[in-house]
Amino acid sequence: MTEPVLANAIDVAYIAAAILFILALKWLSAPATARRGVRAGEIGMVLAVVGALLRHEIVSYQWILVAFFLGSAVGIPMAVFMPMTAVPQRTALSHAFGALAAALVGTAEYYLRTPTLDAFTMSAQMLLGFLTFTGSLMAFGKLQELLPTRPITYRGQNVVNLGLLGLAVAIAIYLVADPGATPLFPVFAGLALVFGVLLIIPIGGADMPTVISLLNSYAGLSASAMGFVLDNKLLIIAGALDGASGFILSVIMCKAMNRSFTNVLFGAFGSVQAGAAAPAGERTVRSATPEDAASILAAATSVIIVPGYGMAVAQAQHKVRELYEALTKRGIEVRFAIHPVAGRMPGHMNVLLAEAEIPYDRLVEMEEINPEFPQTDVALVIGANDVTNPAARHDTSSPIYGMPILDVDRAKTVMVIKRSMSPGFAGVENELYYMDKTLMLFGDAKAVVGEMVKALSSVAHA
Ligand code: NAP
Image (cartoon, rainbow, N blue to C red; front, side, top):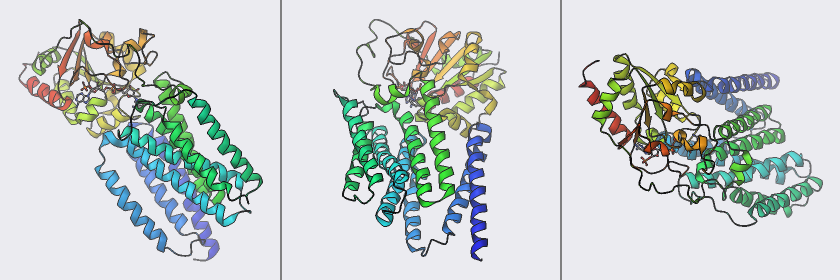
C-alpha cells in the first residue's frame, strides 16, 4: 500500500472506531441493547489497535508483541477467573494500568522531546496519570480488603492534601515555562503519585465505586491529553468519551445516594458513628421458613422482588429466575425493583438478572416501582439492605438519611432473605426488620430461594 492510501485507510479505521465507541456507550445504557454495545466497543477497539499498528512511525513490532503477550497473560485470567462480585476492584486495576501507561508515555516523551514538546498538555496528562495510578491501586486495595476499608482521617488532612496538589501544580507550571528544568521532573511525578494515595486514604470502602468512576474519568482525560501529545485524534476522542462518561456516572451515583462530590471525596463516609449501628435492644424480629414463605407467595396476586448485593454474593440469580417462573405460572404478577446503587457497581442487578434471562420488561426502576408498593401483596427482599432502609426517609441522624430508597415497607407483607442481622455496606441497622409485617428468612440467598421453589411446587394452586 502506498503511503497516502495507507494514511487514508488509517483515518477511515479511526473514524469507524470513534463512531463505534459512541454507539457502544449509547447501547450500553439499556439492558436490551447492552450486548450489542459490548460488541460495538470490541470491534471499535480492534479497528483502533489495527489502525495504530499500521502507522508509519512504527519501525519494529518486536516490543509490541512482547507487550501484547504480557498484557494478554495478565488480562485473560483477570477476565475469566475474577468473580462478578469483584468487578469493581478489577475495574480499579484496569484504570491503574491505563493511567500508568499514559503517565509512562508522557515521561518518555518528556525526556525524548524536551524542549520542543507541548509541555502544558503533557504536564496535565502526567499529573492525572500518576495520581490515577496510585489512587486506583489504593481503591483496589480497599475493595479487596487488603487495606483497611474505613476512612483514615486526621486533623488538617484536607489542607495537607490540597497543599501537596498545589505544590505539584506549581512545579508543573514551572516546567511549562522552563521544560529544560529536568531535575524537577521526578519531584513532580513523585508528588502526583503521593497525592493519589492521600486522596483515597480518607475515603471509606462504601464510596469506592463512586471514586473508581471518578478515577475512570481522570484516566480518560489523561489518555485524551496523551492523544494531543502523540497527535493521535482517536486517542483524543476515546479519552474524552471515557472522561465524560466516567464523570456522568459518578454524578448519577452521587444523586442516587443523595450525596455531593465533596461529601464523597472529603466526607469520610463509613467512619464508625455514634448510634449508627445501635444495638437492637428489646426489639424482636419474626422469622419464617421457606415453606411458610412459599404458602404466602402462593396466595399473593402481586409480588415485587428486590435484589441486592447478597443475591450477587450468593449467585442466586438462576434460582431467582426459577422462583419467578414458578410464580408467573400461577398467574402471580412478578416484577423486579431496581435501585440504582444496589450491589457494588452501577447496573450490578441488571447484569445478574439479564444473565439469568429474566425478561427486561420485568425490571422496573426505582421511581416507577415505588408508587406500586402499597398495592403489592409481597415485597421479597433478596440480599438487599441499605437500599430498603426506611431510616433514609426520616432519621436525620442516619448516615444514609436522604438517600432515595425502595419503599418496600409500604407493601402489605415484607419478606427478607439474608444470613443474619448484620448491617449492610453503610454499617447501619435496618428498622425494616423489626416491623410487624416483616418476616425474616435467615440463610444463604441461593439456598433459601431454592427451598422456596421446591416448597412452592407442593403448595396447591389457588
Ligand atoms: P447492602 O446494604 O450492602 O446489604 C447486602 C446484604 O446482603 C447484607 O445485609 C448481607 O446480610 C446480605 N448478604 C450477603 N451475603 C449474602 C448471602 N450469601 N445470602 C443472603 N444474603 C447475603 O446491599 P444493597 O442493599 O445492595 O446496597 C448497596 C450498598 O452499596 C449501598 O449502601 C450503596 O450506597 C453502596 N454503594 C453501591 C454502589 C453501586 O454502584 N452499586 C456504589 C457506591 C456505594 P448478611 O450478612 O446478614 O447475610
